[in-house]
Image (cartoon, rainbow, N blue to C red):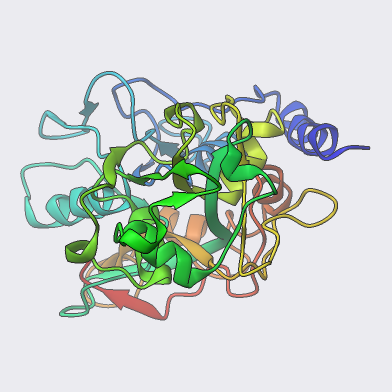
Amino acid sequence: MNVKSRIRMAAAVGAVAMGLSLFATPASADSETRQIVGVGSDTTQDVVNGLGEVILDPNGSPDNQLIQSYNATGTGSVTCRVGGSIARPNGSSAGIDALRNDLTNTSIDCVDFARSSRGPVDFTTTRLTWVPFAKDAVTVAVRSDSALNTPALNLTTAQLKLIYTCDPSLRVLNGVTLTPLLPQTGSGTRTFFLEKIGVTEAQIGSCVDGTVQEHNGLALDSAGDIAPYSIAQYIAQTGGVVPDRHGVTVLGKVNSVAPQNADGTLNVNFPYNRDVYNVVPTAKIDGGTTPDDADLKKAFVGGTSDVCLQTDVINAYGFGTIANCGDVSVKAER
């Protein structure tokens, strides 16, 4: 069975078992109808949507499902339980900032967790806890019909650093002038990728377009385009598990390591591999003076949490499972 059939079957079996659609979507376009609400990362929006469709609310109130997750992009704002609405957060940092604002601004009650494809960057407080739930990896994508892919793309970390600083020594590859792309500011994938290739925000070259929506292969519309891409998202898109936006892109190797195994699954040993997280308020899970949120803990905390038990769903969306799923040791401000 090819990988497309296998992934689609795995997702479909889980969906049929729960009486659900294969393409999981938020519970509502612009208003909150479930107990736990999340926003943020584009990378993990689909898998968290999928988890939201199979994890039941133990008391069936206000909905039979427990988790509601808003896509990073879409029409309309997010209507809060209390306090009106907020602009739809696009990316890990935007989602984390929305959660922080919810904790600071007592006039709103909107966000319970943030999806994040990056780890913390500010350790000035322990206000938030990064709870890992799956493994992803990031490589670079180019158009399959570009000379950049002849022979199949295989770049080193040193070459990627030259490309994204627009170094004159590597502005042309295989006779094609490179047009490097980066996800929008606030993207966890952007932060992670730049860290892995050793480039700071200040070092990004003037030839780089840094406004592209992440994991959208349709944005690669010229021969020289090259962009970081979540391998899990690519697997899910090309496998028919989520709406396909890979266009005609193909994934490249980095340091001669393939992004996918022979069976098409994620190579968890790819050089740029990462845990992905659901970020929650520390005070709501730590047993301290603030009452814990039982639903939040049940959903995310510990290896037997609702999310960690859904290994079939996690794998069906292209991600790898991890031994530290549900760990609560990483705490930070943002």
